[in-house]
Length: 148
Image (cartoon, rainbow, N blue to C red; front, side, top):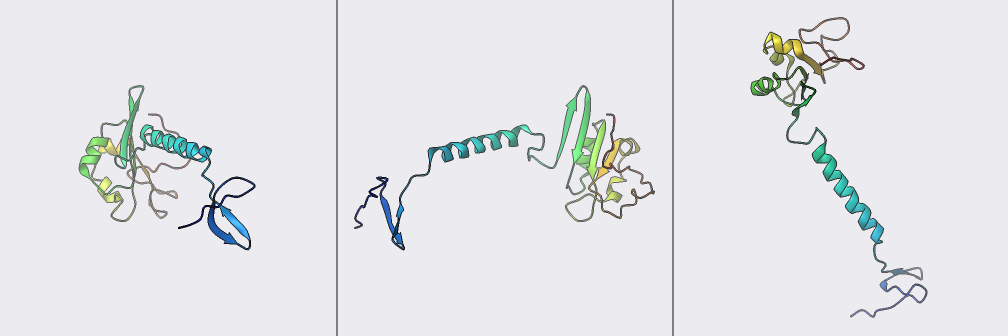
């Protein structure tokens, strides 16, 4: 059984560890640290729920003033998702390679009306809609301002 030893200067118990004559004190974590952790966790939870990118999926819509913006990112092609987004006045959709992305050729199967309201993001660097060429669905470029 360990002998309880108190530091004569601070009054705290020691842990029993000693390095080069220096004894380690068994000091509690300051209450301010726990308060900061709690406030940070509470803020994070609130921010996670209230922001529009709450992870219920990688697609969402936002409506304001009678106009709707539909956004889809990092999703494999799903015709029902395109149908759901087709209600929006402006559709921002990603296109890229790989199973976690929607291929441009799949997006071309959408109706002409949907393609007219769609803008592409997250496209590969060599995408044909860049550098002077045009694609059937326009790319959303940095600095573009769109009226919805």
